[in-house]
Length: 467
Image (cartoon, rainbow, N blue to C red; front, side, top):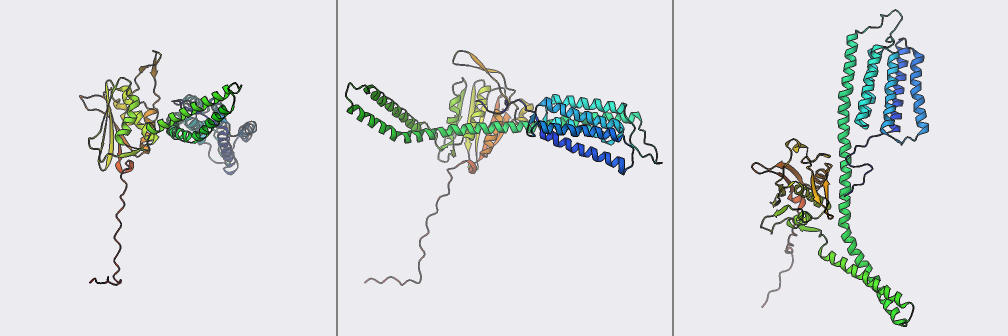
């Protein structure tokens, strides 16, 4: 099955909108300008005012140029966004060089471009920007102009010891690494979940589309039957009216043959609809047999076990999500089983359970708690091969989305899933799907209470006595 996304499933897509970076840079320009004004005129500290304003003006000019040359909705490539964020780091380093280096409290702003990269760009880009920020912080720690301070008789600007400045640089480098990795991990989980949910929606839409085809085929057979019958009758009348040697006789004969062929096709569709089309609701045992049937020809014995009592068997509405979810779990069991897979169903007044067990290697213990998360393969995804019709073999590769999609779809139907390994000496995996019975069983419809007898009218006259 092919999932149509803007980029391949399993590949991370990185990028920033240009408008986002432009807005963030305008915010930085406003903050830098305000800081220069406050320090120069309100606090009375001496700044290399012209040089500082020139550095800020360069950022404003770059923003205007980007806005005029590119639409704001444009999404930057990873490299383009990296160059713009690298410029922000260098621009901040220039301002810090002019205003005291690492002794300036605003040196913490080196973190900002790295955090932006960690949430939206690739890990490689984030590492490179983090290294650039650490190098720039080290350079402005070694070479810088004096820290701005008042000069009207107040004490001289504080001179920080080199060891303290080195500690500031080390703390800044550690913060860049730690916070950058943490932000990237959180953003990566969000991206994975978003992509996996998109894949789930595509799978569900495909299953719904396939389920709707049966109804469309029946409707087409019903609607086209009448016009085809009319065409057949008209063709017969034309054949009778034309002389045997007419040049149109062959065309009329071909028309009748093709009309009859269409009627045969429609009869076939009608017969399929009558016997093979899925019903709207089925007993649980029939649902399981329907799901298991496509997996019986892969050399693995599949056994479906249901209670012998059938009078209280739950009736389940067929829906693509439930069928796909159960089918995916059974398919995984068949993939990893050595000889057999058992599907055991049970029900009570409170719940309905389906347990799928196999005799394969089981789940790796370190992955059991993560099963069902996107891009986590349930059993390390062993490499297995299957013979194709041409006598060749194909290798099945997993992306870690199958169990996530199955779990998501089954949970939408109200199920709870548990993944465990079978207890020794048995080996293999066991997956239990449990539904609250009132949520899945559609057979328990409340009975209509019998109508109460009409109330007797005590004010009515008694019936006349009989002689």
